[in-house]
Image (cartoon, rainbow, N blue to C red):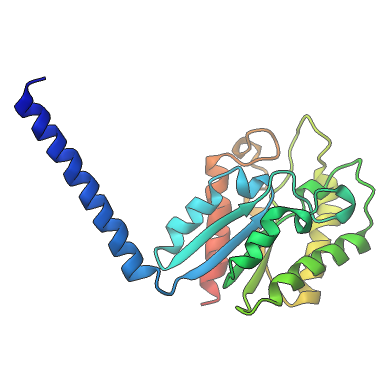
Length: 219
C-alpha cells in the first residue's frame, strides 16, 4: 500500500475513534446523569438470550438495563442453585435498581425436584422482599416464564403450569408486585425455542416486548 493511502486510512481510523468517543461522551452527558436503572433477574433464559438487549433497545437511552441472569438459577433453596445464593444477587442489590424484573421458575419445573408449593412461595417472597427493602424502593415485576416444550432433560411444562406459575401469581399477590405474562405469547410456538427450553432470538424479542409493554403501561 502506498504511503499516502496508509496516511489516509490512518486518518480515517482516527476520525472514527474520535467520533465514537464523542458519541459515548454525549450519551453519558445527556442520558446517564439520572437514568432509570432496570435489574433483570433470572436464569439462562435471561442470561442466555438477547431479551435484555431487545428490552433496552425498546426502552431507550434514559434506561440502564443490567442483565443479572445466572444459568441454572432457581427459586427454591433446596435446589442448591437458588438465585439468593448466587453472587449476582449481591450485585443486583448493590446496583440500586429502580425497576426489578424477576423471571425465575423454569429450573423449579423439574420432575426430580422435591419441592413443596409452600417452600417455593416462601423462598420467592423472601427474594422479592430483599429488593423491596432497598433504599431506591424499586417497582418489582414477576414474570410468568415461557412454556417448556419437548426437551432432553427433565423439565416439565405440566409442573410449570400446575405449580410454578400459580405459585408466582400467589407471590405477586402477597408481595403486592406486578405480573408479566411471558407464557401466553409463546404458547403453541415450539419453533421459537432452540431446545424446548431456551427461546430463540425471535422468541427473546417476544419476551422483551411483553416486558416493555408492561413497563410502559405503568408510566
